[in-house]
Length: 554
Image (cartoon, rainbow, N blue to C red; front, side, top):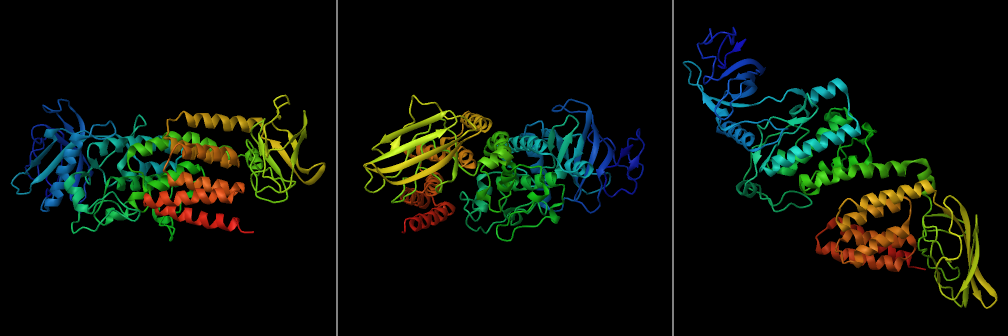
């Protein structure tokens, strides 16, 4: 069948061998190269039609093949013409296998026979396959592994789009094609916008704030997009590249929940979509990333595609950590923690040796088979006697100091075994006080998992601050507070000005029972947060300061 391009034609279908439309006389071979085969969208209420065509080829595209052609049939509005011209430019500039290609002679105007209607035509590559809206209706919600694969593909496409100085403005499942070879393609660049200095000036972008884009502008840009997928700034005519991230996040919520977005509720306090209960197959690290993409305020979203790709590269490791933490053996052992270097809680009468709110008789899981032991001094104690006994280990040492290295000649603690540690504060031959603690060596399998994860993180080439935060998360998931403190201290001693790390150190000191040290860390965190204009961290640091001061009260 040959199809007539004239939107006012009463009978647009014609035989294959026809040269002119039998109803209106319009040529069926457009510009001596293009024959319309069938309409893919023929909506009398739409400004555009889309056709599957046979293109005989041109100088710039010398290949005979089946392609697509978009036709702007009602060009009375200059803005509509501008949009299709911008789409033509974008498809000429952007070069990625997941974006339709178009050449300089694929955009042209055409007048039907005996008509004053000017049709703006754009020819482009046909991306064969099924769009994700149809796919999700046929197959249901997707798995985590497929979600990560698809998300990586789309972010890489978006990275090319953004680097080409464009952003899409209408990302949604129906604009994403699963091609026959399984790769995704992003289509319909009809709403695309070029990132120019003029455009940025119009929307008054000043780098963004925690609450929006910047100062109010008297200029407005064309409001394009799709309800439920478009962020507020785009609805207000102030779309930016990060607006694509919002739509991308919502697209994946649709894919991993299988639910239409209109059926999902929104948290009235945060503005975040409530969706995780509908996607139990998704681990927390991926869920957190999707929520960050959909942050209501642009400044809270990732700054660019490379940041997203870096987080995606770390997802498998983070998911592994998440699964280990949720495992029953890990959860059982997570009630107590390591004493690589045991801290204490200020008490005047007892020689505390545990480091995490431990009271006498409680247990602690430790990671280091040769832990150093330290404690607070006891008033009028002249020396301390330290006893450790359990499977294969039994030794006693006396010292005048408040710390003791693990005896070199003594056998190391065994993974999975339990030991009793006792510290007596002596005054001559008289024991003024004593404290005893049950120490459970971490099971070997979990110790190896933690060590393996730490090594993997150290190979990721993260920034030092990012690495410190990840290691802190791992150690604290097992309540290994000493390791967490040591990691944070190393970065702070190296001169980091990241208020989050200082605040986390305050949290760890407070948990370990060192409110004075915690107060110092919180104070520095508050100073750095104020300097960086980081309201969120400032609030957390101020809360920590109050807690540390309360902990010092008698």
